[in-house]
Figure 1 (spheres, rainbow, N blue to C red):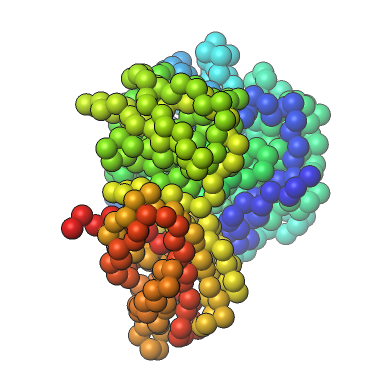
Figure 2 (cartoon, rainbow, N blue to C red):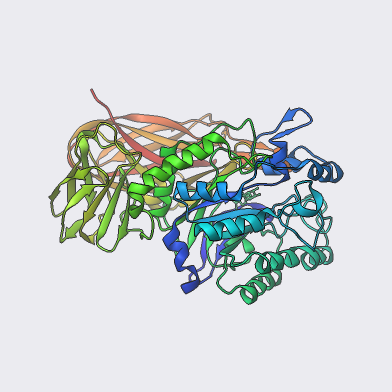
Length: 581
Ligand code: JFZ
């Protein structure tokens, strides 16, 4: 089976999340579901991103590590944790209202605190908190009543409460014998408890597999298969096992992956509740990220971070419900759909079910014109979901759709079109008046390659850029082809990140058809940091305007070459932006 490799390896702890799983029947519900709720809830929610008067930023569920809270002080928080506003039914109702089809909750995160009754460790919500209720049991019952599937997140290598586990002090990892003792006395017994006390479990969501041995991952997987053969396992079990790939956090890929895979995403910039993190994604941003993931064949699992009393922040629940209202009229374009080969469209993305194509308009088309490159047979009626009929003109190279003017377009307008795609054009088609983005992953490369650069802004707030790297002077090139459906003036802007260099800048060359334009690229200010006890590089990307170009209708070829310098420059994308004279 094709080994699916995620784009990101994050050093020792995060591990290479890949999976050769072949879930077959066990995973059919997963690919139909497409959209899920992730819930990060634990003792960290009670701290809300603040410790002893100081605010912390990034992943709230890491506050024990980032605020250097002692084991004793953190364990004492359990004695204050009393989420009297918790209601499992309120959460399942929110998931239903949001249009989400399954829920995954943190049963035990890296802090070691179990949100369920456990005989393997008294450090759990029933035995160690005044709340004394098994919220996983209540949520399991509420999910059964609501017709939702339930999965459990379990951190199988990091456990900051247990000296025999990883993560407490990265400078002093446990011995192999100690870690095996942790697996044998806590991790595996707790996974067994989750798979025997809470009814049918849809999936176990492991995390940070880094130090797991192949035998360790295999033993966990064998145990799960023996207890609940239909339970899916994500790739963060480690060592290429599992049934589906979990990409890097918050990673929305430009291309799809084979087999089952998911993107997991925060709603603001943290998984666990932080009172001062108000950087919420809007409903349209969430719908757009959902579309982009589903159009590439993945599932999108969006997180909520309830507070220490069990309340879901109002902005979070309101936004999820707004997306849910959109899904009530547009869900047929998301659930149980398949990806198509037509990617990288200037106006948005395409999903398919049989001969029904769904055009998701992430960019508002000028004059309502939408071009779908490719050759199509049996073109039938077209209509905008929730609005009405759409005019459709067929040419041998593309379909042209003209949308009715609507005062208030849906969050993401979707056109449903019955047609069988005979051939999907790979080159980009640029419409006058619309930006045309040439991603690094779509270039023909000579003497260079594409990698995913990733870094953290705030802790755990991961950023990703697919970039062309290793371009050498004169011997490397990156070429894009695109077709303009009308002449026009446009700027060509390059988005890149560059390390400092002694010359102050490097010189590059852009060839558009026969026209050659040299241009400089300056350092963008990347820097190495040792924040969060992790050495990593913080990348800074900027956009640089190479120049203005008048392009006629028809095909064009754009080629980038490097003329000077050898230090690292990461090229993310070229964008042709229309310029209204
Ligand atoms: C992990 C956790 O550390 C975090 O607290 C949260 O639960 C998240 C969903 O999962 O964070 C990761 C794990 C893997 C990657 C990035 C963040 N990765 O491989 O890019």
